[in-house]
Length: 357
Image (cartoon, rainbow, N blue to C red; front, side):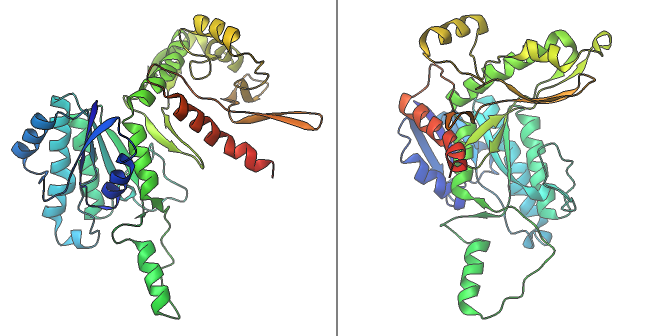
């Protein structure tokens, strides 16, 4: 049985993870608050890891008083920076996957469009700087660390801006609020699910097959490829996915290679066909019992120069006369649970079903 250590267990996210754990009996959880485990004390952290031997450590602990951090910079740095480095180092020493929850405050806050994982950092506050130092310490001490940046967290538990606004609306007829802040509220239960996905050995294995197939298909065309060590969590309306951006630099002699050539090498990837590709393709043909039509095929645009942008037609529908056939699927690996896979497929179909109404 896999073991999961959760630090900062009494915060919003920690409590949502507790709720989630009650339905995940395949894992053994250990929830520790800051009173149970002062994460800045190396020996205590090492002793907990030695006695519990976790396979995953989800760090929800943080100094979150953004304004107060300006006066308590040392304390904020200890909790958000130094302590994260300790957890990551001990995780690496024990072969434990470290998952750390960070914040959008690591960015400068002056962008005109939403931030992505690739956006340059540049914190403008002590709080943001200490959280960035924590990310850097995690990656330095454990390059396989998973960093989840979030913003404006709210939930049923604890104090948060949603509860504050609801309280003030009951107490006052008129509210004065700032108009120069933009943010994306994050439901702590969704964040707990994202953390759960990031440490799922089944999902990580499934994703690794897909990423490897893409990297191997691009290799003959590229002088170098960049495949990040760890995936990020892509949050869509109805489901969450692990995602990895694989990039490559074309070999100089192949600069005139067009999108069709790359497409021929890439399709079908392990994400929709399986691996090894030829064997998986034959098995699908034999047992799937249906013609996929355009499902799982490439879709996008290619211009006259051979440049283009293509994706895979996954959640999709094919219209014939007055009927539409909608598609969704999931990846099957040794650790798959049939009921969970069916549940995932149904969730993926929600988008197409909603479009029909």
